[in-house]
View: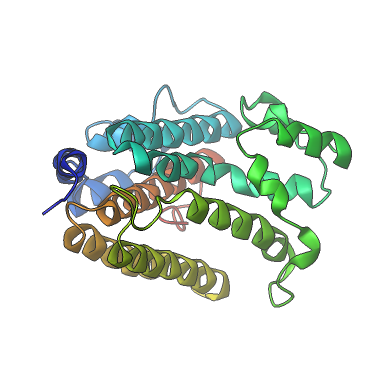
Length: 277
């Protein structure tokens, strides 16, 4: 049972959302579609349509990606408005997860690709000059990521993965800072913090396993993570653990949808590698 009445209310909303998730048959029907038009038509017959907005088969890939990032932010913002006030700051911080690769790219001194200038979020700090980039980021909600130092990257991680690690760590540090204090009225209990830490560790292990995997696609690894997240959602019912597990499951769902849309848009002649690519 939830100690906070707001969490009980939130749990009811999350259960309704969870019940709307597409079934395995829904996914198989969509993913059997050979072209993007048929794929989108199948997806729009399910609750997955909430991610798509105006996406269509003629839309440029960068516009599709922009819509999916915006849909993620909207989904997080909706959950945040349902959440108890003392949890909102930690929930809202999840809205910036899709921007982490872009921030890491820029902080690593790379060139600004054209799509960043068209994106309503990244165009505010898409500068190649380091001082200008940092000044612009300091004025944005993503300012805590300036704590990332590319020079401290994990030497065991090759290439781009190494450059992303400091930004990821800075994001995690800020998320932890935003969690309500233990002992505070309605704050995170010791058990909640332990289970949130466990879930975070499982997600990090999943990312590392994906980077190290030699499999053609990550379906098995993603299914294993989804099963762990589902256990957190069920056993953490009525607590903030269920809230974050739900959003993590949303992230996996959106990732799978993105693979289905973008690969059909970019590689219409290839049947393989479209699902959970």
